[in-house]
Image (tube, rainbow, N blue to C red; front, side, top):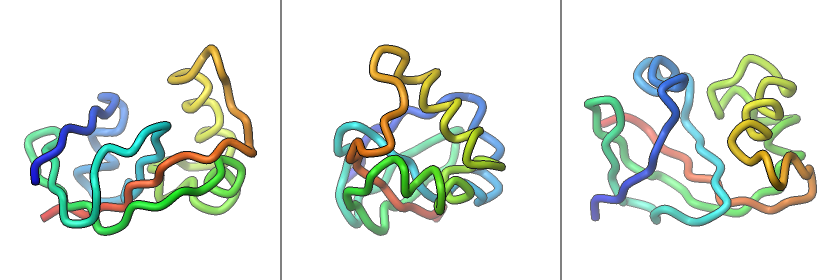
Length: 99
């Protein structure tokens, strides 16, 4: 199935060069095997699971296309200004690769 996952333009390079292989979202956008298009390329979701933001920020910021834990936290706060960054919040992780 083809699904739609929106990405900020800031992540175009990270997606196209393969350094962003995860996207964490407050809702589930797809399941294993689903495909999505971003910046003219097609990607396939390999795994979908729940994880808390604290673990993502501390151990998986690179998979999110970030250079540091703090960069991930800052981006999350920008995208979610009302709720902000709560390290205990569980979110949906979509692990993917370009095809």
